[in-house]
Image 1 (cartoon, helix red, strand yellow):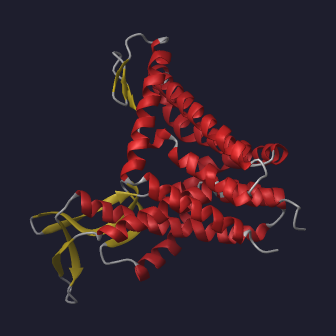
Image 2 (cartoon, one colour):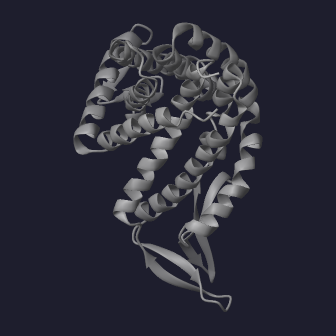
Image 3 (cartoon, one colour):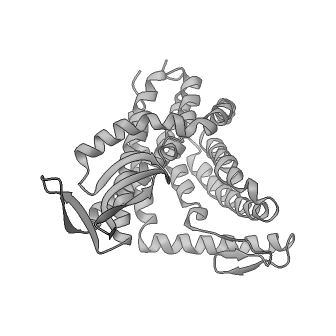
Length: 334
């Protein structure tokens, strides 16, 4: 049985168009407006618990000393685009109704997320990372599953995915490290000399670079950028759940390949972002005699935009579209 190529291609087309629009001027303006509206709606709710909370633009600040900012991630554009991509791939008869209901549900979910995270930060700051990076991503997947899949399939998928994700979370860094040797090999072949190797260093998982940070006493240091491989394999337990549901293990292969490609793109994006942030940047190149040559480096604008777009597209495809596409196939094509 072939992987659902046509469905994936339709989803990719919607994801590319959606994220290209989101990164445009009008798209960013819309995202800023939605983030501001969510912050305005969250303020009176939070003031029921803490009357001292004040809002400044998209920032909510308490007199107790904590603050949260409703960022571009909170405007829900990634979820909305992923929902549209999933529905375009699966083409249900009630697709437009599901899209309309889903868009409303996403914003209500985002409002709930902002309020809960603010209350957790206020009352139990030690649990913030668990709620933010553990519980809400699970709820996000469940929300999109219900909005995208037929209800019986969505319930079975969530029932299989939940235990797999709970097992995955504490082992994520160890398991995702298996992608690193292949990613470094690919980067050594296709990336420019400014891109180094992905490794777990004293600062955690980072991508190395040949961009000069500073020179002191003849010793040269290079910039590093955070890059956690597990962040690009988040969809693996969800794909495993979909595979278990459909009993089609061959779909693991393209899923793993797509995760590997997303990690490589992220490595290039991270280094190019470093160069842009520290412009004018200097790249250190070996001269063949054991020394290095220092040359000016500027990340090319159009490729940087395109690589970032491709990365964003694949990350959302792997996490919020592909598992549902696989799960929806079920036994229809046996």
